[in-house]
Length: 349
Image 1 (cartoon, one colour):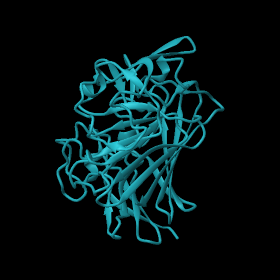
Image 2 (image 1 turned 180 degrees about the vertical axis):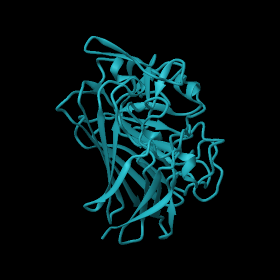
Image 3 (image 1 turned 30 degrees about the vertical axis):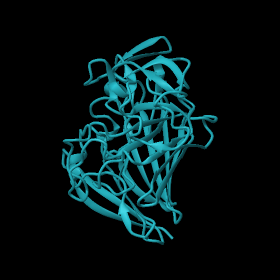
Image 4 (image 1 turned 60 degrees about the horizontal axis):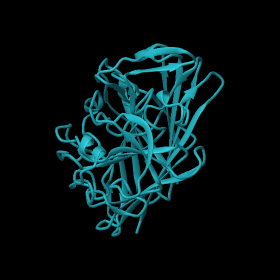
């Protein structure tokens, strides 16, 4: 039995009301969501001794969620991750995008979906968020209606549905940017967490972590997580992607058919016994080890976050897909629906 509570939280930059939504299952495990960025603020689940702790990084104050570098727990868009040169061509027309980065656009640019207040509501045992994104916003064509739904169950599964429609041809890539620390947020780094990825290949990038167009095998490289290993084990190796990112910040191509529900990742923290499995219909998973978390606002429990205090497992389409015809398409046309699923499943080992 899931109970859902709506709690007023604060105000946006223009005085808008911001609500939190807490979904609690029969065991007392809960998820807290925010209308800012349709984001995840807390995920409270038990350890092997039954002690419940928040395993998702989040900020203490609602105002800290606007224009933050880490994109903490939120849904970025219109295009998550990078688009090279902040431009792409569609149907023979070039679109130039607004960006605060010199060589690419990141997460849809300034004032993107993650920094907008979505319209939230409780509906049929879940929480839904709606955002209307106008034609031309940050350079993207088409009026887009984006829709995010979260469901939480007694098995500690958080199901995230991502949908969108457009009245003109456009590109779209939606994910969630939640950071996990299975020891509990603010409780040290995640370098000892064991990670396994259902991925034989990864996306090769340049020094700005923008895809070159090459898809390479993980075999014989520190990008190989086909067998579980500690996240920090190979992080100091002399490897281009690790040097450019100061840690892992790359996209892996998930083994399986895109559009079908595939296992993307498994994360385990042995001291607590907590295990997270991530399943998705999306073709890729961006693993970001929180390489630049130091200096961000304080966490929910008042702790200061430092680099590597959380790991993001962002199920998404491949970065810069609009500029790489060989990548799975991110084009959304009128009458079509962007419709993807992410499931975070928590358990005890």
